[in-house]
Image (cartoon, rainbow, N blue to C red):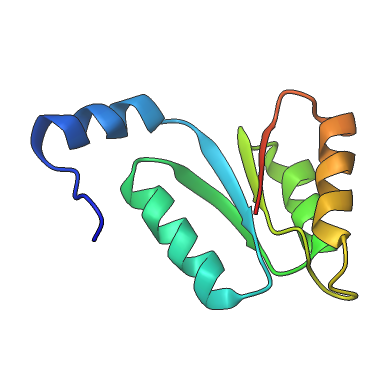
Length: 101
């Protein structure tokens, strides 16, 4: 059972997150959309969603988000494509925070 955020606490949380732009990358569409929805309700701006590493890198280059949420295993090989993309993002955009799932 999760805790709901309401009232003044929710308003403070949204104010704290306002303006933080996020790209979400996961090949599982339900997980990706669900995570994007939760982040949006918390006040983050979702600037893009990707199902594979190449789309993730395109979105990062186009939008330069504050945060990238990245699945480790993504198409086409489902091995370390997401992790490799996270490394590429770190090298090219060291100010982007990366959360690897």
